[in-house]
Image 1 (tube, rainbow, N blue to C red):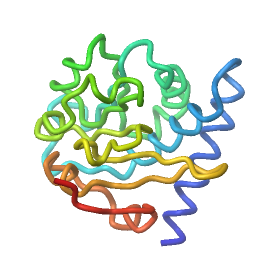
Image 2 (image 1 turned 60 degrees about the vertical axis):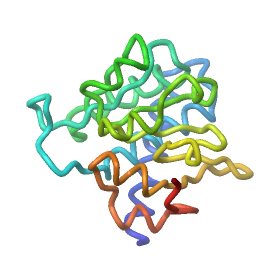
Image 3 (image 1 turned 45 degrees about the horizontal axis):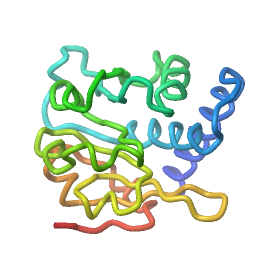
Length: 178
């Protein structure tokens, strides 16, 4: 468990440091959420080959969302080492095709059919309170100066994807929500 904790922590620290240098006016919380989301994405696996032909997981964000710029800067720095494609989608409806992972900002949680996205095979990540109960997959939670995460196993199973058991051990909460 410590090995995976160290990988996520070191990876998040690296991503935050490299992104902070490249982004002038970023919100530190958004930058950290982007780093953690990208690191969690590294441990998501799919049961079958990618439909995009590259073998890469596709991480979708809505164009113009606060986290989109941070993710783009971080992903560009990792392109060679991380099999992940970042896609900016014009609407949340576009998440239903070709996305494996999606970040939903807390301000938009109620604009998206979370259960429908899970059924379409999309692992959803958000910082919205009540996200797991609403059908989301991974909720980022800020406690004091730290951001941790919780996982909805019902939603994860619906996606047909898995999250490393070592990473699940790092979650503050792993539950099955209806």
